[in-house]
Image (tube, rainbow, N blue to C red; front, side, top):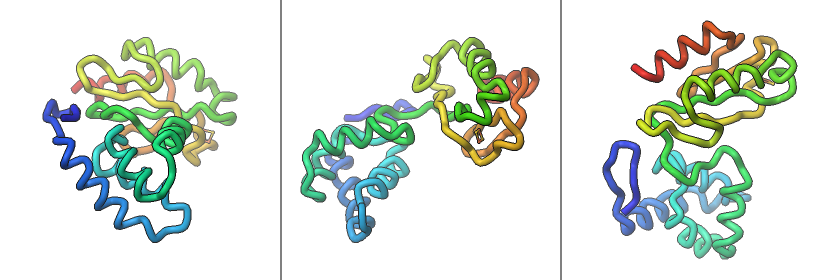
Length: 164
Ligand code: FES
C-alpha cells in the first residue's frame, strides 16, 4: 500500500496496472521515459517506487537508470505532495531581485525547506528554475498559478491562503 495525501492508500497491484496504462499511452514516443514519468506523476501525484520496475521492464532499461532520472529532475516527486504546491523561482533574474530572501521568509513562515511538505500536509515547497515571469521577478507559482513581484505582503497572502 502507498500513502496518499488524503490519507488513503493505493494497492500495489493498482500501481502496476495504472503504471502500465500510462506506459501504453506514451511508449510510442521517442525518448518515452520522460513523458511516461510525467504521466505517472499526473496519475499518482508523484512517482511511486513501485512504478520503476514496471517502467524499466517496458523500456528495457535498469531500475537504477529509471530511479536516476527521477532523482535527477526536480520536477519529479518520490513522495506525495501536500494539498498545495508552492514553487519559488531560484533562477538568475529572480535571484537578482531577492528570491533568496523570499525563500528564507517562506521557509521560516512554513517551517519547512525546499523539497519538504509541512507536517499537516498543507503544502509542499519546491524550487523552480524560471517561470517565464522574469520581468516580474521574484516569481512564484502556487498550485499552477504564477505570481509575480513576490514581496513580504505577497508572502503573507500566500501563507494565509495555504493555511485556510
Ligand atoms: S528567472 Fe524567475 S521567472 Fe525567470
